[in-house]
Picture 1 (cartoon, rainbow, N blue to C red):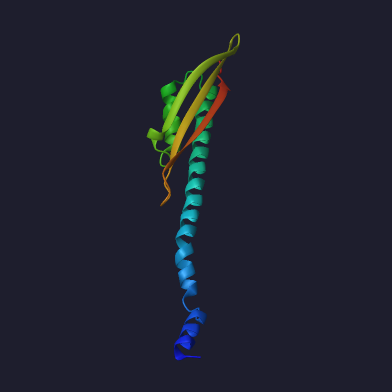
Picture 2: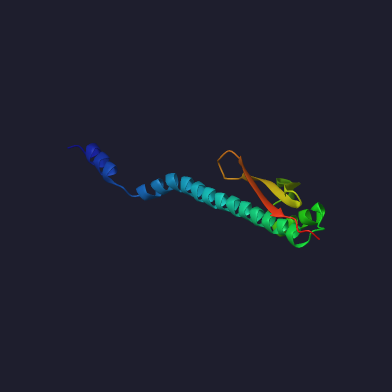
Length: 138
């Protein structure tokens, strides 16, 4: 066997650095996957916070019959402050009559959360929440 063939055979059998190459190929995909999971978890946390704030805000109508929409809106926005950008949250209020003499307040929220994951096109998730509470008679 010639010296050239022996050197080529040793080179093919040498696996030094294979782990580094495999890591360099797989690590970016794993990091993007991990960041995606974290970002999706944060989106669901924010949506859950909005749902909680809407339910707590709607309780204001139950506890304080003369509450205004502005007071409830301020209460909801105060509860989501620091977690959700107010520009991404739309609140709506409606008053309904369930039966004669019994009024109900419906508080609804629509929340948009933009997923920001490296190397992945931006996607916006839409979350909706609503609650219906009776309005206490004064």
